[in-house]
Image (cartoon, rainbow, N blue to C red; front, side, top):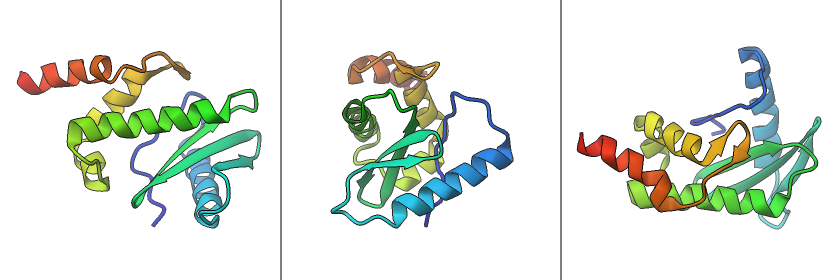
Length: 131
């Protein structure tokens, strides 16, 4: 349906600019078929996306970024969420948005990937769950 469930920005945009940008990108990605590659250029961004069941994960990066590394990052994020939620779905993200944001924040700092170990990403969340 094109609903944004989790978004994190590392450039300042107004709420209206974010909505417009997300709408444009989602429409562009949903219009593509499975035989087309997972990279799209939009404005001054490179959009890397990947579909898992009914979920689309999209990452916008500048033109200097390695697309394959971003695809691997998306896969790592989904694997990490799968490990915590058990086959992550849209409802997991919606009802546990703070955990999804926490995972993303453990992995990315200031727009750069800083952590790739699933155990290190999930250990603070597991500690919070025990408390």
